[in-house]
Amino acid sequence: MLKSLMVAKAKEELEQEMEEKEEQKAKYLEEKSPPLQASSMSLAELQTLCEELHTKIDTVDEERYDIEAKVMHNNREIKDLNIKVLDLRGKFKRPSLRRVRVSADAILRSLLGSKHKVSLDLRANLKSVKKEDTEKEKTVEVSDWRKNVEAMSGMEGRKKMFDAAKGQNQ
Image (cartoon, rainbow, N blue to C red; front, side):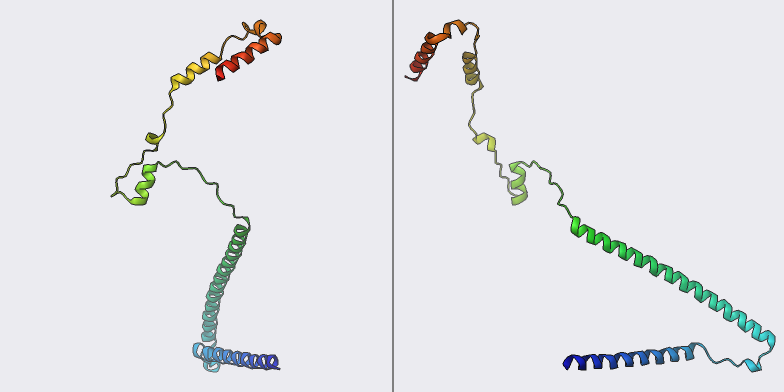
């Protein structure tokens, strides 16, 4: 019942709005176009009046056509942009992020500002490894394998390897 009352009220308001628009249109036309008295005019005056009215009608038609063309163009653009927006919503991909190398000092400067001069040298805190020791170990381990092939073959060679490994551990 409430819904039907709301519909009836809306219908009445719509009818009132239509009547008001018609009244406004009639008032506007009365103001802009005064009534013509063609009976007191001569034939030449009527022809000039008709020519003036036709030129005014032509200019108004041209303006109307231009405005309609602009409206159609803008509507087309709006539809295209709406389609693009919908496409972007569905197809948005995150861009691949690039690695940026920033030193620890630069990070501290950006966090603390340029007033604080704190240097953080992480490499100074690292242990140093002597390259000479690793090179010696590699040279000892690498030898000519062809010399030891016959000596290490068979059970005697395996026994020698076992004894050598046992001696190094003790």
